[in-house]
Length: 326
Image (tube, rainbow, N blue to C red; front, side, top):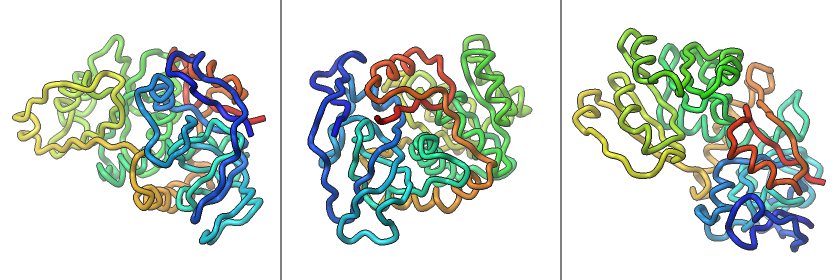
């Protein structure tokens, strides 16, 4: 098969479409013939040599894919050759085939084609696990999503609205904010022109955000805590704004607030399977019914993964960038 390899860390040009050995499914795994994969910011870090795959994972980038099962390993129940699936991966999505633990598979939702389904696993699992399983967003509460027009952001808006929450978003352009509004966002904040702490305070009558989903990390830590409501929950899922910051513990104590930080890739198989099962139970019916949909910015040939990385680095996209396998 062919896959995107990274012979040496570097810029987008470090991604090389090359012939490699086919993967072999281990016990409890299936082999998926990939129709499409999706690009995540973690892939950019891996390309730069800053986010290596966990032990035993594929060395090729790609944290999600969609395709068809072509081989079923021993011990796998409930899946068969020919099933159309999408999958959460620890790596290997930028390839024509990938071996996937059965607990990380999801069926392609009704009304979507296989390519579209490639935009779902990482965002649905990230949003559901952080916003609902960890931060316990409830109907009537306010969720603040940083990067509202991203793949994560567009999914978070839809899921929060589906459960009856109010949604605030930050984004850097009017076009992106307008798109967030179309998805249901109630409070639109241009982070280039407005202070999100002030805007959240104004929009909530001084109460603050009950849950904040943050992809920035250090740069936003202090302001995020100030923007929280009493008993608020800050869920950190990225570090685009750095890794070290000071935290005013007194503010956190006064608000009786909580800060959590999670990642998906290195979790044990059992934890990933539990998240995938929860997504299938709670999120898949919303997608099947059309209430929630994947947002795809563009599709590129998988061999042009370098261009896809440039698109993400430029941050001009809305939603997910997909890579279509030949």
